[in-house]
Image (cartoon, rainbow, N blue to C red; front, side, top):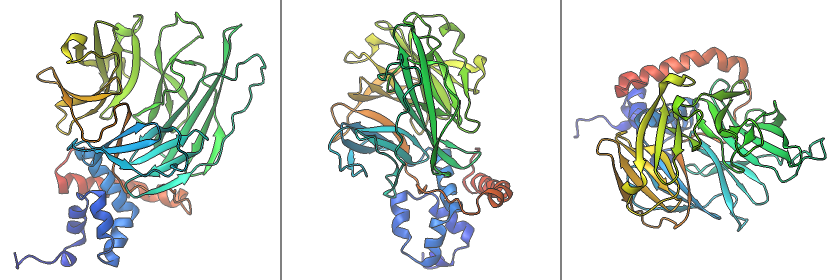
Amino acid sequence: MSDLPPMADLPSEVLTYILCQEPVKTLIKLRSVSKPWLSLIDSPYFIHLHLHYSIATSSNVTIILRKESELFSVSLESLDAAVELAHPLMCYSNRIRVLGSANGLLCITNVAEDIAFWNPSIKKHKVLPFLPVDRPSDHGMSMCGARAYGFGYDSAHDDYKLVRISQFVDLESEGFASEVKVFSLRANEWRRVEEMNYVLCYMKKNGTLACGALHWVVTKKFKLDEVDQIVSFDLTDENFRELPLPKCLEDQRVQIEVGALGDCVSVTADYYDVRVDVWVMKEYRVRESWFKLFSIARTEVVGSFKHLRPLVYSKSRKEVLLVLDNRRLAWYDLRKKRVENVKILGMPDLFEAEVCLESLVPVEACRKGYGKKHNLGEENHKKKRDDFLSEGFKLVL
C-alpha cells in the first residue's frame, strides 16, 4: 500500500475517473481538499461527466416522495429509509407540488404559486419570475379550466425549461382555448408559444419528460366520448405533435396514462377491474416499436389497488418499481412475473413519487459568452466525454 502514489500525484485523467464515481455528498466534502480539486469538481466539464456517468450506470438515483408540505428522499439502490428534505419554499405551511425533475433539478411550487428550480443535492435554488394568468379574450370561456406544467432539459441549447398550459372551457359551446408559456432558465424569462389544440384529460397532471419532449394525455374535443391520445411538446423546437399509441389501444375505451421508463416513453393501459398493461416505445415516434413490457391482473397483487404507476427500472433493469394507489411501493420482477411489496422506514402513508438524480448541476445558467464559444467547443467536449466514459468505464452509451 505504501508504494501507491498519493491522490494528489495521480494523473488528472485517473483522478477524474475516480472522483466521477463518487456520490454528490462525498464530492461536496472533497471540494475542500485543495484548490485544484475544488476547481475540478466545480468545472462544467466534470459536472457533465459526473451526470452522464450517473445516467449511463443508473447510479445516484433517488425517489422523491411528497406529502402535502413535506418532501422526502429515498435512495433507489437501498430503499432503506425516507429522509425529510428542507426545501426552499418551506415558509409556506400548505401544500407543495413537484412539477418535474431533470438531471438532478426539481421544479417545485406552492399555494402562493411561487415556483423554484432546486437542486436538493447541492442545496441551491432559483425562484422564477411570477407569471399571472392572462384572461381569455372570449368572455364565455370559464376561468376554472385546467392548468398543467411540464419541466425538462433542452439538450440542443443546454437549457432547462418549464412549460405552463392554462386551458379555458366554454361549457355551453363545448369550445376551449389554451395559453402556453415557456420559461427558459438561460434567457431567465417567460414567453408565449403556439397554442395547444387539444383538451387536457387530467387537470393537474404534470407533463412526462422523455426523449427531449414533454407528454400529456389529451383528447381532440371537449366531449366525454372522445378517445384519449398522447401529445408531445418538443423542448427544442417548442412544437406540439401527436405521439402514436400501440395499435391495439387506438380505439379501445381504456384509461391510459403516459410515463417514462429508462429513456423511453411508456403507456399504462388500465382495463379497470381486470388488468393493467404497461407498454414501452423502444424507438421514439415509431408506432411499430411499441411492445408490452408486462401485464398485471388485479388478482396477482397482495392487497387490492385502484391505480398502478410504473416508476423506474431497478439498476439491473430486471425489475420495475411500482406505485400503488399513492400509498405503497412494490417491485415487479420481469422474469418471475411477481409483485413484492417494499417497506421503507419513515415513508409517508400517502404520497406522490418522482424520480430524481443526485447531481452537481447548478440552478443558474452561465449566459456570458455562451452562444458562439459553446457551439464551437460542444462537439469536442462531447467527444472527450464519450471517449472518457467508453474507455474508462467500458460502457456503451
